[in-house]
Amino acid sequence: MAAEYTLPFEGSGHGSWTTKSSGEVAYTFIALFGSEEGKNTGKLKVVGTLQSDSGKDGWSGPFKIDVFDPNGQVIVTDQGTVSLTRIAVEALQEPG
Image (cartoon, rainbow, N blue to C red; front, side, top):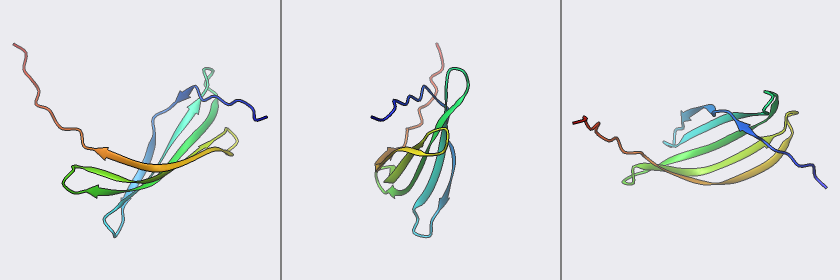
């Protein structure tokens, strides 16, 4: 029987991206997990590529996510496709 593993606090994700020769964008980001006591309880890493969806004002592409325990061992892996849509800029409405 596998031990139960909880990840109570997730930090913000930090990473990097680069434009590939095909016009796609490749990215990697990492987020850390911690306990209520401030101890490291693991991290997640997401790796993927995005292709511009012309005419839809968005991006889509495959990704892979790995979740690691505090010792750096992978405990969960998943993959899929993400679709992103740009958030429209709204005009500030002046009071009154």
